[in-house]
Amino acid sequence: MDIVIAIIVLGVLVFVHELGHFLVAKWANVYVEKFSIGFGPVLLSKKYGETEYVLSALPLGGYVKMYGEQNDDEPGKETYDPAKEGRSFRDKSAWHKAAIIIAGPLFNVIFAIIIFWALYMSGIPSFQAVVGEVEKGSVAEMAGLKAGDTIISVNNEKIRSWNEFASIIAEKPNEKVEIGLNDNRKISLTVAEKEVDDIFGDKEKIGYIGASLQIDAVIGEVMPSSIAESAGFLKNDKIISINGEKISSWTNSATYIRGNPGKELSVDVEREGKVINLKVTPEPKTQNIDGKETTIGLIGIAPIDGNTKVHYGPVAAMGMGLEKSFELTKLIYIGFAKLIKQEIPSDSLGGPILIVQTAAQSADSGFSTLLIFMAAISINLAVFNLLPIPVLDGGQLAIITAEGVMGRPLGEKALGAFQMFGLVIILSLMVFAFYNDIMRLIR
Image 1: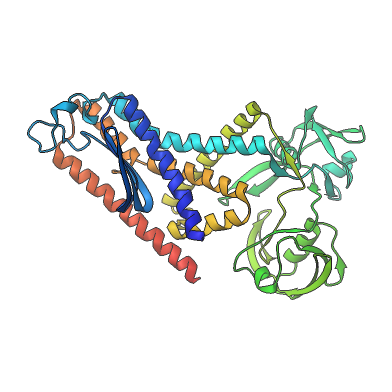
Image 2: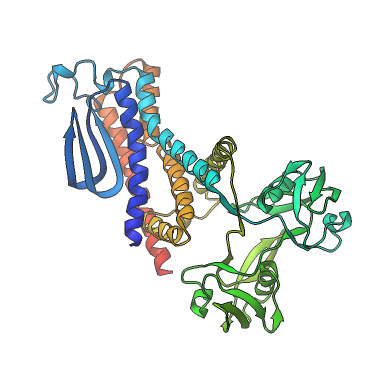
């Protein structure tokens, strides 16, 4: 079943990518000979009009075969067809060829934007902006914010979820803000500044007031092959006590677990109206917290996605879809750059096996999570294809640029050598990704 889900995900993304090339090629009046999803043995084949549509066995890619891509439109070539005169890919202007090539990655990005747009309109699982804990001595405590307060606005901007509130505060270090509460109180405070690690471990400064979200200690996800899974924890278990100490919130339970690395804990959970006792020993992990290397305990559980759904109108949802897609694109480019600079480990590169695993986990977490995964992979596919590597879209754009500068087409020998070099790079990356996947499974 996991493989089926991954095949569907990859198949849809490859179809979207190749559809971009196909539609723009048709718009440019290029003769499209074949539209293929997948490689290898042909499963289905049907010719409609001038194009043969093919579904092949290996869903790890696809292609749109256009007349004239390989100089086969020259008189004297066996495949030359005078009836297709003027409809060759190579006959087209540099702008037309570039548009056809860019269309594939562009359609992948548009597809991701549409996914996010639909998700934001249908409703994003979120937590209500209810304060759970307020740190002693923090700017929140000094301003009068208390546990149980519900935040309804910041600087008169309506707040619909804790995530909206946290995002606004994070962007306003050292700025004064006015927070509106549900009991008609309004409090003013100057947002403090805090240095944290981003997802790549780099330092960044964000706004911080010292208030945390109120989340019930209900398990939303148990990580596969984790300590928690081995100990018998299940999704929707509610943690009610640890070592006899009452647990009132997710933050409370997380603090207890993180603070006891390597020590066995006796955890009482409520499951379907019954109290069950489980024993678990948090795995020690070293993390950089506030600039210090700190050992914490982890067992492999995550909280529920939210206790409410926030819906956005079509225009607002489109804006947020564009913003989210831009953020993902930026992160992927930064990740590629750091991978090349060896600032992040090369074993983080994954291949088909990792995609199968992640797709299955996303599907287990719900259809919305699977769609988010598809959007992320779609943008990844777009970014990867635009890298200036021969045989990829970015490599073809580089060839078109070089031909434009030289004022003539590249020679067949130079073009062949260029493409062979790109093929070696792609095959090497695939082998390395497979190796990482296998080693990840072994570990």
